[in-house]
Image (cartoon, rainbow, N blue to C red; front, top):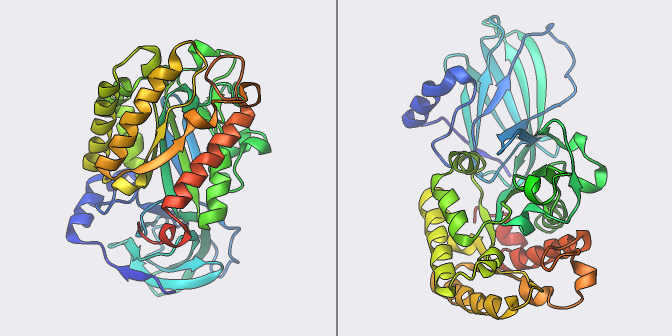
Length: 391
């Protein structure tokens, strides 16, 4: 399949020019950001260097995480950064599975390319830098450019990962290489993230794996494309608290604007139950969250999944959670969003197997089960064929 190529629009050029000095430009067509390709000069005719992986660095609540580049958009913006004054132009091949699928030449004066209608996969860019006489000055390959699916997991401490695998990291600028292999997805994109509220309930750790690593592996296998799941769990938060954070927290907004998730997994309600929030209020908060995601982030109803809150073994909790479940089911039907897992039913029995010592938080085995249930819900709604399209 040949990728389509087009020049950026005038509007896109203006957006690039406004922030070009930073080396990164926000695109105008719902992509995370331009891929910036450094093109330094080397000896003419030098052999191709070892492919250099592209990465995406996201500032978190504290620190950051760096992952192999991924975006949900099927349109890739690439800007050549001409760092050697002797390099005047570049011949660039977009590669998939080691084969060129598109080629374009760019010049220093107009260094941006846009490749559209890309199939999901791990791409690379093979670049030849040329001087003004069209003589080769350098040859470089940049790899790990993922076109796939970015997912945001919105929730409380259960999503954050409390009582799953936890780590204490002195340096919170995180990457896959800093964690044991069992906590890292096979593609290196998912690994434990900073846990913003662990200092309150488990101060011995500051990063949780949660269920994202396991879900990444499952979805990558089923959808046959790169996947990343951002852990946006916040311990102790209610539906109203999360809605307020979505509306006002600049860091949360910036992360979502950079990642541009295509799928949203929402699991909230246990803390509402503990606070005896009325079922109608929980429903209204979740409805407002749906509206905000549609308006501000272009979320499609079918790509938002609402879960039934996890079973809570605390006295009196079951009746309240059942009332929430009814409101959530009604909201799913009214808004056309997708049905997420029923974590109430999934964990209502066999507590010692699935939960830790408290009444509501899954242990490591419980986290694996949550990943399996999220996988089942997502792949039933979005099977392989749909996942490979621009759904």
